[in-house]
Figure 1: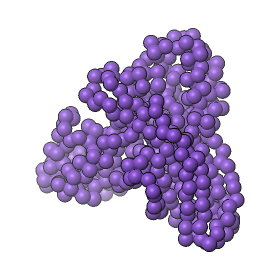
Figure 2: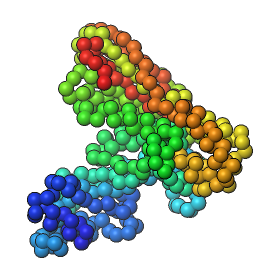
Figure 3: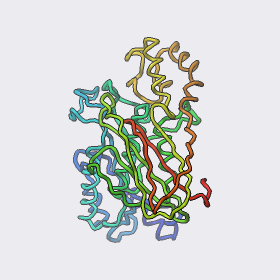
Figure 4: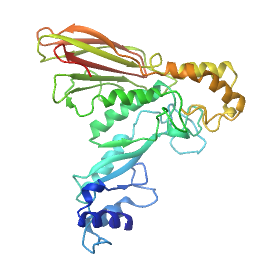
Length: 361
């Protein structure tokens, strides 16, 4: 309690609160409100009713409250190296809604109904081999791209303000290397930042892992449609699915449609790496922790294998380059525009629709 009291209120009492930004707390657990390093209920009760140890007044301001969220693995595991007691879980954020609801209920009980919920850290714990994923806590490949899009969809649906994942960027520094498909998915999601979310009428179940998110830019007529197709188990992908999206209540005009594709054939070096890994006979014991972790160079044990990676790194970087968009000129007819695409499993697509009298940026 001393850290929250000692930082939060003295700064605000001196008029410095706005400069330091929001201050809150992390629950030190994955949202179950049991079994953590400390009891979040005690903390929330202190903030609501306890004596602030810096001001001697009742109550402490709480701008946000954070949990973590980790799926167990990108597949169904019988066991893992930590012997966790969650057999059978795949990578589909199945418990995310429950954790968020428990957190919101706890905040409401203590009078913090307007306090933001955040997810601080998260990802996946183990690879398909049952070993810890270590750096970034994310598997390589397009699987993590669609999992990342699913995460964002869950944030929107649960009214969660942000998710700060472990770093996945590979552009520079100690862990530089080929960029990840998941990072490309984040770039597509970032293009929708600040947009107004639009209603999407879908003929798929609410818990489907094929989802559509649509938005409109606030100061223009630009519409963006993000589509992703995911599955719980990377070893058992869903069938490729044709998709038709109809946009209505538009002004009749010619429009420019930019389309970005992120999948195993666009912006993803992982299939080639897996092929090379097997072709050169690399075994599980050649990796520190899981063979599926995305930071490959730091996972390899043998200098010969590191040399193999370095020799091919330039070609991997080319395969992982952020894809250029495809452009089509389509016509809005009687207020409607139909977009068609084919969605392989573990893919993320973004459509950006701009009237021809505006300019894509």
